[in-house]
Image (cartoon, rainbow, N blue to C red):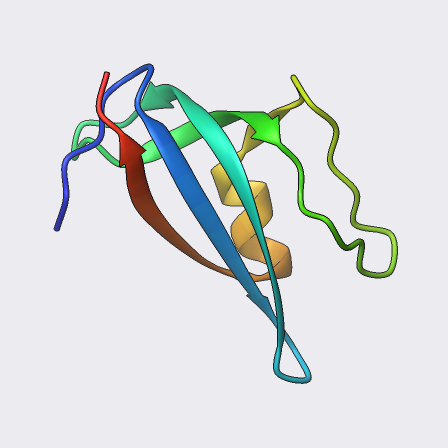
Length: 80
């Protein structure tokens, strides 16, 4: 398990039903006691949109709400 910190830049890959996924870049805004991101800020939104899911630059996203619509995989881009 990786430990994330506030201001880390991350890649977020969201797997949705029907074997699709989308990827976007974000910055960690808040972490929980296990250093897992709980809130992220969109740096570069996904190129594609799926159904009513859309993201904008600067948008703050609650990771738990994201987990309700897709399976989330987070990896480091740049350490703070």
